[in-house]
Image 1: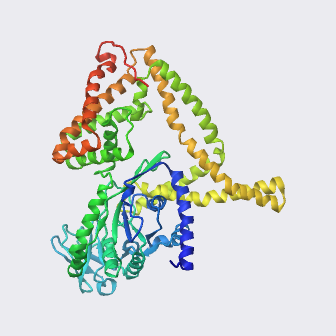
Image 2: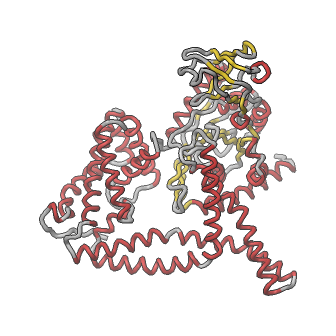
Image 3: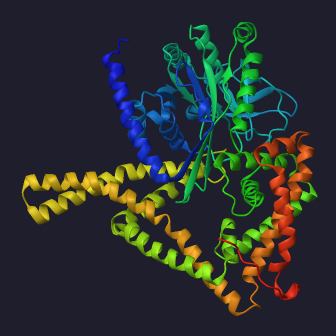
Length: 591
């Protein structure tokens, strides 16, 4: 197999980018889990489609995880940025014109009536200013132009559901139709060579808890490539799920979906009726992509889904990430379908009270079992955690004077960028999708500059000659990032250790003063909630689907849950607060 010099250079550049992505991803995330990795085709033409919830981090995570060279479709606007544009070019990305990036304000004003697709203009120049296929941007919708009748009149593809808010007309924005033929040619050439393409079909990044409407480009590229000679093209949906991505202790899950194939019959039908075939393929992609994600109606419901998934299994169970992921998907289906029912609202009210109680106690749900320890176990845990805290503090904070200012600066600049991006976006909720990405870009620039400056200062001040100054700069640029990384890894463990140390005084005070209610209240509340969540899932699940409980049991055996529920019903009286029950021997958790 002959490899051209250009392909050899491109591969070497991609290896460098892959190494950089591994460094960045390992620094951001505490745990990275890949589910159904066996579904990833390692050879042949492949189109990877993924959700886009974290701007540049999404691409870095895919490069980190997928063991083959990939070519990303990147907006032309992004390629023009200095740092990220250079990295994208080195990675061999394909430029794509994103219509929203070329949006402009039209000349004059427009007005219309409800129930019509006819737009009238005032002081407008439709014949010069617009083209058929362009879209008019309304407050909550976009409509394509199908006919330009005159300078002051045009027709849209469908009728408008509301009246014009101002009789005198309003200003309007135009999203031009872009010629993507060059992009399609590059994608087709890449797939014909057996390479893989990565597309984020939602268009832009966002922080919503469900998918945005998918753009038809991914379907068109697949069909055009096959018609152009690419063979055995498959589409692989990949779900990227983040947990507490804005915080330092965050996790990432990569979920490979079922591959989607395009048959010869689909291609023949595409040549006859493109619109219906593209819509059908987009529907398949959307269904499979949703199966790779944990979606919810809003951010708050997402929190309740996660908390329910934490309460449903038996306490202290070691649940594999893939099982926990599937459990959250099952619970998500209930909240989507029956989120407005009284039973669901009752559950949410109880979850809300429990969460506030946890926050007041500076605890997480998976740490409540610590309150059941005996005095002896609590003392041993306290001793162990204290030693770990001292060791981790020494290792994790030894270079803090150097990296903490960088950390604070990157957070400050990323927060400013988040606020700015949120103002300019109509789809972002909070703007967390740009926060981590911008923070990484800041650190990629600032960290080398700081290390270089530090090396120069040490070399000039302590040595004074050029050779030793060079060695000083080399050592600072090479080894300081490694020390920052080690520091960061151990510093991230300190908050959890501090919370566990906080538990011991609660246990001691509870044994000294049996009238203290805090730890008893938390234990009892969690026990009651576990039973409530299980009853809710077992009651509402069959309403979602006749096979819901059997599917759930295949992931998490119901017999396990039922036996644990029986145990909870037997022991919950032992931890009931004093004011509502008689004094009893406090059961202790067996370690």
